[in-house]
Image (cartoon, rainbow, N blue to C red):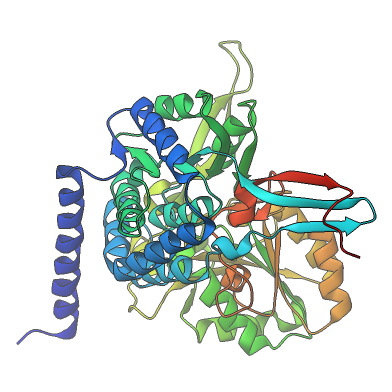
Amino acid sequence: MIDEKQINLIVEKVLKNIAAGNIRETENKKLLGVFESMEDALEAAEKAYNSLREYSIEQREQMISAIRKLTLENAEIMAKMGVEETGMGRVDHKILKHQLVANKTPGTEDLNTTAWSGDRGLTLVERAPYGVIGAITPSTNPSETVICNSIGMIAAGNAVVFNPHPNAVNVSNFAVDLVNKAVMYAGGPKNLVCSVYKPTLQSADIMMKHPAVKLLVATGGPGVVRALLSSGKKAIGAGAGNPPVIVDDTADIKKAAKDIIDGATFDNNLPCIAEKEVFALENIADELVYYMQQNGAYLIKGEEIEQLVKIVLTEKEELQGKGCTDRPKRELMINKKWVGKDAKLILRELGIYVEDDIRCIICETGADHPFVVEELMMPILPIVRVNNVDEAIRLAVKAEHGNRHTAHMHSKNIDNLTKFAKAIGTTIFVKNAPSYAGIGVGSEGYATFTIAGPTGEGLTSTKTFTRERRCVLVDSLSII
């Protein structure tokens, strides 16, 4: 007889073997649209774009429909591959993310024509493609971003060349292959979406500088966004965030606690929109912490907090000057080993053993604690007590670092909600809901995994990947 824990271990091992098998299969077979060199990928994409120009918008929509269908059919496979290859996140949540991009990423319906007519004739403004788009994708949402971008970019009439994150290249290229299969099944051109087997900084540089690439899109950290913005080309950058959440004393505390834990633990806190630090009014903080513990949070205190800092953060030494006698400046940086890992695995490093229902580690800290300042992308949530809403807003704005990405608030006071929204100035502001409501989960609005805060496009969609073209006909076609 074997107990439930042993059964779970066996199932987990089988799932890992399945995912590993998919990765090996991906490594050993020729994938559609994936090339040995970036130059070949760019050449193929340019040829595909020239073919796509002969297709109608209706035909493009047929391609998008096929991509959606194939994504839904392969959501579980890509979720398992992603977790196995990157070591980050949760399979069940990654399945949901693939379903989200398949169902809620806008297609050709996002292309709207503007018209003016009057005494002097008719003027039309239509949405036209850029041509070949160069895109850089992350390891946190690899295949999700490839598919989300592909849907929007193809619907807009473009071809795209991806330079995936090297740590997620297999699942990313699996998604590239999937998109090409769907496009060709719908009668579209081959190699409409391209990539390389071994993406590097050099291949990214070739992509950014190639004359065929008219638009660059990066989903990742501040470094990759800075590189694109210095390319001299039109660039859309989706950078880092460090989303704060405020809970005031008018909120439904029980609901707020559950919503925050649900959002902060979705895919083990990998999404850039997820709650990263909490600012709670003193008079409701105890109640909030209590209900968080009722919803899968484990509270650590005292020395346990400092031990956790040493586990999930490491010191980076930089010389403060150029002289050999200069003292090193020590800065903390994320220990990538723990990014996207389950809370129970992180707690195990502290010598704390918990069941699977524990999904988040919470602790009370000061506003300047490293857990508040650094974007951890782990299911670790610091809670800062504040005296009033104004103090909470001031500290939350500081913690967000001006990324203008995402912020959250739980409150029934319209004035407080408005004051925080104006002060923080983020692309996404979620009120009284888990963070993932900001990308259309359980809420209104479309989904995207490329949220362009640094360059201002916001939640990208099909129309983001188009340029405006104006057609003017004077003294004709107005029938007023």
